[in-house]
Length: 129
Image 1 (tube, helix red, strand yellow):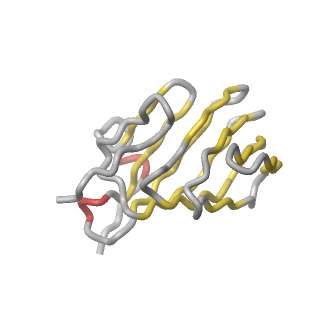
Image 2: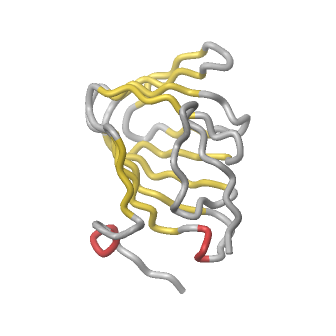
């Protein structure tokens, strides 16, 4: 059994931040469960482009409001608390945060925690030990 709190991982290698975002990686590939689980916050009035070419990501928006644009299909979605989106087709996407957004995210395959978004917003596929 694994029990963790976001408080205990704050400030550790599981707490990763970039310009306008922060990801607390609660479950990682090294935990051996086949997925990773993150709490991600996006700062208000920021725009982010992502493309998870190697991962499926499910996102549950707990708080905040924003707009999600599917860059592959030109579709726009308004997001608020209780919204979920699933990137099951590896869609390139843009997220506009109108307010601070707090999301719970699941990745499959799991991330290791050492990945960094490249210039296209892609995480590399890193083997899990």
